[in-house]
Image (cartoon, rainbow, N blue to C red):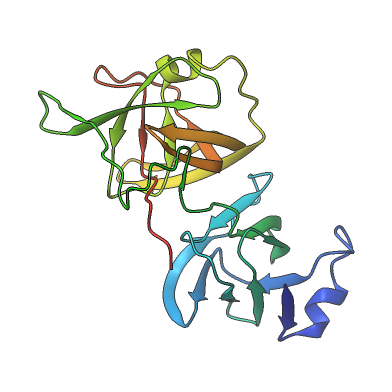
Length: 224
């Protein structure tokens, strides 16, 4: 994992976090690039979060990420299965602990039957959505919405109740028409769907119920 600091002065200002590089910014919204693909204004520095994580798409190769503010930029290369931590220093707003992570891996087969594919049973709900059955760690069976438009593993109240232990160790924020909301998160969980297993997943817990399912899975089997 290699780091390139475009502004060395920024790292020297990391008084509260002396071991971490610092990116200074005058505005909460930042641009970032992943392997040259620009996400303009897609990152919000949020001091209220204990740790804000950019989860990169599942990959078997290193990713180069560049964060840019109106003052300077910070670049890092994160190998597959690793993470890179730094501080976004919002002028007048405080420090934002930030992580770029490639820890989420592609699925692996629990049983090798020689087949090149896995058949995933599903149920088409009365709402015309796809539902699959799976487990998180050693949970009871979970009814999960298969959400191809999301990259999150989500649990509602009923789903969280089916896990023996789930300790929240972080937060994530999402922006919708009604404003910004925060959800508690828990890292390092194993998701199983039939004979596919994802070994290191983050679970976002929503304090609400859903009459159709225990949660949703945006996990995919793709790798690049």
